[in-house]
Length: 275
Image (cartoon, rainbow, N blue to C red; front, side):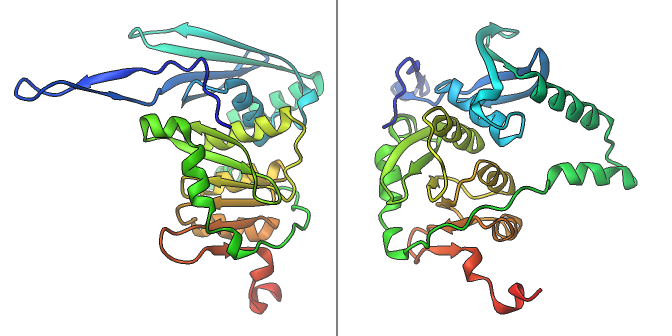
């Protein structure tokens, strides 16, 4: 369910002269630079596992590509820039049509400023208008209670290291499909998205259970790839709920003690529907 073969398990000693030295297995945090067609795009910190799934999911959820067929090649290289820190670079070669679209968006991004009315373009990029999701099946609250335990069971790397986020992909009947882990919560969702795309899994009526709170960007990623349900162990932000309702995404919060909270389009009040 969660394969981290090739991942380097490393432990670090801790303690003082007055205490006995012990060791702890810690989660890997690695700088990763992404470029598209040789054009630098983003640098982020990742856990170096399932990197191909990550970059595919990242490209899809950012709108760089629309489908797996848009990718021509993925080149992953280990680099060492400074301070003897292991780093990774990934170059994504994409179709000419998507590359032209990417370059045009980059020009727009570089021309944006954050002052006065010029900031309107920045806000439009931060909250883009996306296609609404197709209607999905109704969630039964009774089926949600056991999901928290499922995430714990399948978070294999987390059991070793702690301090790592997870995203568990669930089938329409709540059966676990894959669990992806990363030091970044957004990265773990991107890895699930990439896994689903590589395995031709349509995310309609599927659910992703995440260890973190739900933010606006996670909602946008889910909507871009057609995911119907997004479940979190921490409460969502107000904007995340508003966007989820707008796009038809069923957003679920699983508190530790209280009953599940389902923020779904079908649960809008009459006042909201009539707006």
